[in-house]
Image 1 (tube, rainbow, N blue to C red):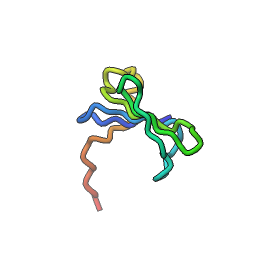
Image 2 (spheres, rainbow, N blue to C red):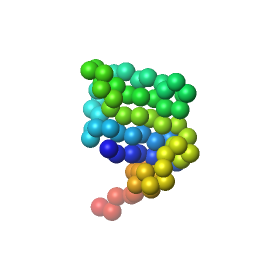
Image 3 (tube, rainbow, N blue to C red):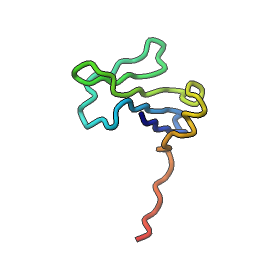
Image 4 (cartoon, helix red, strand yellow):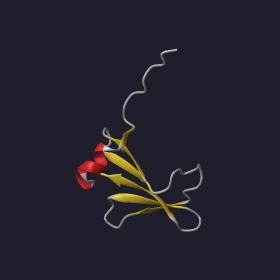
Length: 78
């Protein structure tokens, strides 16, 4: 499992598999309370979860280990 977090949007993506290839997530299902979107493959397996208001909903231990995706890329030193 891997978690990416975008602080500017306060959204997290929780990967339940190592990698999701382009086109692999074929069905997106909103959670009943509209707090998340569940991504499924063509066999109905849950691949990942996009979570809104992540800071409020995820445990701080999980948030501290999340990969930040909202930061500017570092300039190349080459």
